[in-house]
Each structure stands twice: as C-alpha cells, then as structure tokens.
Length: 424
Ligand SMILES: C=C(O[C@@H]1C=C(C(=O)O)C=C[C@H]1O)C(=O)O
Image 1 (cartoon, rainbow, N blue to C red):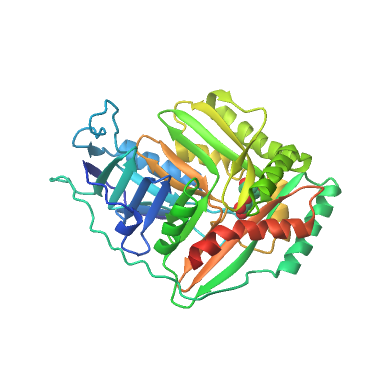
Image 2: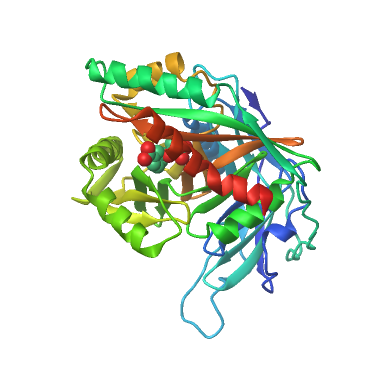
C-alpha cells in the first residue's frame, strides 16, 4: 500500500458562471476525473494527495483518518443557492475520487483514491469551483480555463481481448454446466475487446460522447478508466442510501413497436426475473446491517437505455451512524449483478473459467466527501485507456437456462456505448 503522508486539507468554493461542457475544463492528463449524470456532477483535475490501495475498506479507513483526525478548513464562501430560489446548495468541499478492483485477491491491478486540486461541480443550475490544497486558501478560487481540444481517435479497429468470441461462448457453456450440476446459482462472465485508434485515444472524447448519448447513466472517469455506468452500487446523500440494482437484459431494436414487445417480454421472462431476484437479494442482505428503514421493491421496472432494456430495482434505506458511502460500497461489492450467487463460489468460478484479469472493471467507481456522502457506481460499459488502445469489457449473468450464443449477443450490445463513443 502506497500512502501519502497525512496532510491537513483546506477547501474553498466559489460560485462561477456555467461554463457549458464540464469535460472541456479538463486538461487531458492522467488525473482527469469526472462523475456526471443528466448534466450535473463533477469534474476534477490534479492530485493533492492520494492512496494506492487494494480495497474500499482500506480506502475508507484512510479517508476517515484524513477527514476526521486532521482538521479540515472548509470555507464555502457562503451557501450557493440558485438565483431567486430559497433552495440552498452546499458544495461538498474536500472530495476524493476513486476506483477499486473487482477481485483484489487475484488481480494484478491496484485501486486508487485521489484528492484533486480543483473540482467544478454543477447541481440544479448552480455551478461552482472548489479548490483543495494542503495550504490555507486566501482568495476565492477562479474557474479553470476551458481546454476544448478533444482528440478524435481516428480510425478505430477492434480485436478480441483475452479470449476469442467462440472460446468465450465455450466458457459460458462450462459455467452453465456447473450451474446445472447444482454447484452455484448464478455467475457473471465477462469478455474483453481491444479497440485501437489510429490517432490515439483521448478519454475526454469518450466521456463527452457518453455524457451526451447516455445522459441517464453515470459517466465516470478516474485514472484512465472511462465509461457510462447504468448501475449505482450505492449513493449516500444526507443520510439517505440508494442502490440501483440491474440484472436481466434485452437488446433493443430501432423499431418502437418491436421495442415495446421486447420490454413486455423482459418484464415477464422468468429467466431474467430469477436473475434479477438474486441481485436484489444480495444488495438487500449486504445493506441490512448498515441501514434502518429499508425499502426493497417487490417487482422490478424496465429501465430504457439507448442500446438495451434492463430490469431495475431501486433499494433505499437510512444510513446508520458511521456508514460512509465508501464503507457501504465495501459492504456491497461484489453484488450478484456483476459476480453471482453465492458470492464466494461465483468469484471462484469467474477466476477459473473467465480467462480474464478484470482489473477495475465491475468494481466501484465514484467519489466521497468529508461527511462520508458520495456515489459509487459499478464500472460497467467502459474501458481502460492505455495510449492508442482501449480495453473494453462486457459481462452477462449466466443462470441454468442461459444460451451461450444469446449471451454473446448480449455482451456485444453492452459494448455498443463505448464503440459509439470511440467512433462518434
Ligand atoms: C456485467 C455487466 O452488466 C451487468 C449484468 C446484467 C445482466 O446480466 O443482465 C445487467 C446489468 C449489469 O448488472 C456489464 O455490463 O458488463
């Protein structure tokens, strides 16, 4: 574990004019961070301090020490309410952005939690900049200057990642047999595809396209990962905990009538409803010790995305004392939506059969503030940018009556957002 020395953090925020695209404020280096949905959210840049670690538990302990044992001087320059509105918006002040690892015991990847030098945030029509520093901040911060130079990747070509499509189907078949033999109930198997851009790959180009086309998803960028996740592992805001659970998927067509029929089919499919139930139960069980007054919906709704329909359930509860958003993410990861049921057996089967080091794919990605509030999405529908390459990932929940060819088609549908973002 590589830990920066403990520091005293100062944060100061000021309201700024809306700069339009928040992504255009990012300079285009490895510390670019973003977490955006429906035009609101944050972008951040630079690194004041940080932690290279393995697990969200370690990161939560480090963040709690940093924010509770060391005094934090958060001067918000007043509360930033919208013009003429009684509503009040208080910027989070000191924040960290992080991205973890799917299977820290087996992966070669590290997790990261880092505090940026500045954050620009937007919520409900109010935009602000927060400067974060180890030194006292004597003047109100100014808006960063936009850098609207997003490079297009040029011609994009694709190649199989760790396994060919045919070999992956064979692995799915192996998983189905193990499930049918009664070893476990569900396992999520993922595959990798490698995209190469003739002109290199600029994560800002991808993030800007994803934030536009998949605006109902959480466009997240941390330490060269970028994606548009439809799944919120956990959000804690003012003590309220929310988790959006997805499992059960059907690819959309370009035809409204056919789509309506597919949505109805999905909502009644016993295979998908069964798969969904496992995922909701795993989230409800993991949240239980940390929450009071939990609400677990009886039946899912159909979430419409441009490429697929998902069965979705929003589980809510009230956080117990001391349950930070990162602590909750640690308790919830890996959920059955990205791992399987039972968790331990599914994780072992994935390691044995999938033929892939998932790294940070399918792990929590998001942010936390000094109060412990934050949002941790699951890093799906995204990829790791490495020079002129992007390693893209997509996975599917496998149950006893899954069909390998259908799962391959589903994984291709889940790769569409990144392929369109690269090519667009
Ligand atoms: C694993 C992925 O997606 C997950 C699996 C789903 C499914 O199997 O139906 C649906 C949403 C996600 O929970 C992915 O997109 O890579």
